[in-house]
Image (cartoon, rainbow, N blue to C red):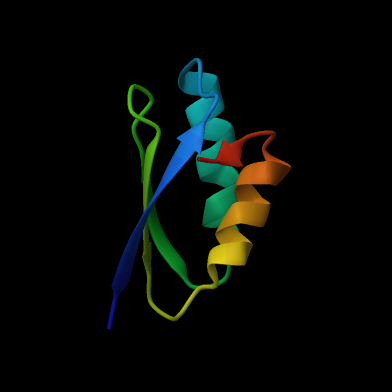
Length: 68
């Protein structure tokens, strides 16, 4: 059963920013899909198991950004 969570990432300026954050979040175990909209910072994460919000936050921070 898939689960979808939405977050907001602050500080995105270009498609490279989107790629960096998406790549880090995709490395979280259980993540099936990542959709990040540059203009709004909307990050939608679809998982096939429960993923802790702190894991998403840590991945975003690893890419150099923060959740709003």
